[in-house]
Image (cartoon, rainbow, N blue to C red; front, side):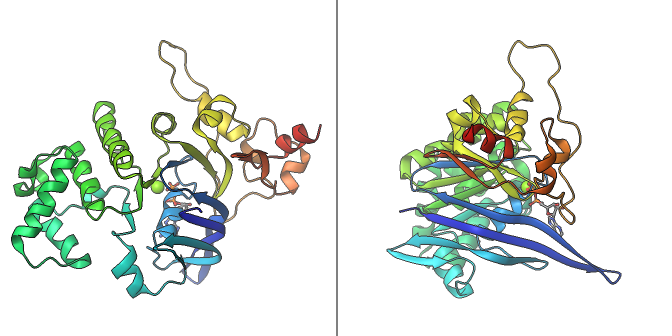
Length: 331
Ligand SMILES: Nc1ncnc2c1ncn2[C@@H]1O[C@H](COP(=O)(O)OP(=O)(O)O)[C@@H](O)[C@H]1O
Ligand SMILES: [Mg+2]
């Protein structure tokens, strides 16, 4: 039984400016499943729709973003809820933070600099649980921080006194205080230097290993996925183009976009320049016809311009959406 099952999800931004309406198809027919006890990575260049996808999954949808179709079935306590239609009250009281928690992109910079860390914890705990007893609250926080290897005295600090890495750890500590079943982290290491990144990723890995919960890790950084994820999905222009176990994605990538992302990773000892893929992801207000990757694909053929490739199951856990892959399979 999957923890979360997403089927044919579409979520668009519909905006209106100077009388011109615009639809940005940021998530366009996305399907995947999250299992219990795994780290699932979502990769892809900037503006491919990664953040939009997890906003929708975590139930944090605000206009102009709207769900246009599909289902997101989340299973907990032996029942199924559709995230798209669950009552806001149930979401707030039973699901958010306790079941699904979300470390937002840039969350370390939204920690209020003039409030002590303790007050930030207090706010979250009060909103979602309410512990009247001051000593119980203090004990909960201290024990949780200690378990994560963070000094409990940090509760006394103001965020501006802390390094970027420490702030990110606090954002993660905050998101995990109620031991959620699903932790979603959006670009948790992007603003950090490499040494600090390692510590933050290790913290996420430790939390996952300790509680056997599920981590959905979103980052454009393929090196992070290689080191942390059990499975990886590659997103391009609002769709998933390939998904598989991490070793398959890196060892035998099938989609030209995935192949390109991997080829552009730096290799130790290699002083040559890496090949950069020309161009940029398309404007999602008017995505290309057929395969959305075709204008940048070195292997594009006539059919790629016309026909949207369907997802082809290559192996139990490996699938890719590319006409060339289909051809190879049929041959
Ligand atoms: N509030 C918004 N209104 C309109 N378009 C948006 C908004 N937020 C994001 N987008 C667009 O949605 C697309 C996907 O963005 P995003 O989900 O942030 O991608 P990623 O996280 O992969 O960088 C982009 O084209 C972006 O410009
Ligand atoms: Mg993003």
